[in-house]
Length: 349
Image (tube, rainbow, N blue to C red; front, side, top):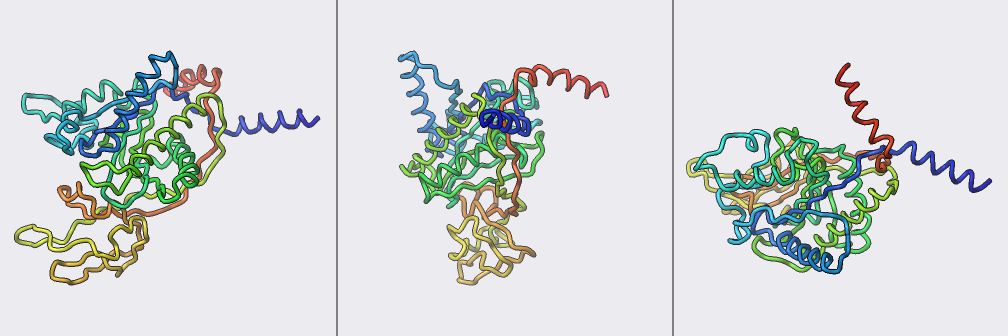
């Protein structure tokens, strides 16, 4: 009798969970920015481990490991000609090429051919693109969707484990509300994707604690994929999502365009601490305090990021809300076989 009740409850759990396609092809990318070294060294280490496992005839989860911008990695520069992580919009991937086309734009099309094409059924199922920031942001997922149940569940799985293993490295989920055609970063090429951004770490430097946090995050992500593919049901969760609202530039001289102030000491290194109207925002080089003039409290992040000086961004501001993520499981064979017919009938209607 007890076994029958347990079986019935188990079936109820299966019935209410959202069935999603298996994640058969996963890519882990590092070096999209050639001077963000945690991802560079981690991908190299994973490639070495992969070779050793092949020699031992072990068969772990099949993962594509990619050094995204090898020329920039070789020179330890963010990029050679232009920012690779802004080259994956639909227009840039499909535009004409010539002898003057920047190297990174050509490389983005190579990566699109390898991991995509973007928006197609042939694209890899999941891309994790590894990044470092000089800002005090801990470990962040950055995505273009606040309803990608795969990315949100991976985030919650990692969050639960990093809270126990690395309590000094907080985790946040950042959402950039941009359409698929206009999404511009490498992770947007996959069916699901996110950037794993960890800091603070200076560019051109690798810090052991930041590298270890990234390695642990990638290992937990791959563990989650294995569990999902094996049929594990993941319970519904609530996730705090930070949706980017706007960027703020540094104060500048009207005639020269030169920066005339730095991030205020009370804001520096306080990413994700709520910024209220009239809170100190900048301190001019002559010592004057400039206050935040926004109409609502928002959460700052990428505060004083080194690489964003060229983009005229001193910090970004986000609005936080709680998102309910449904329980999920891998699709059954019957659901997978029925899906094309359902899509066809929807198109006929």
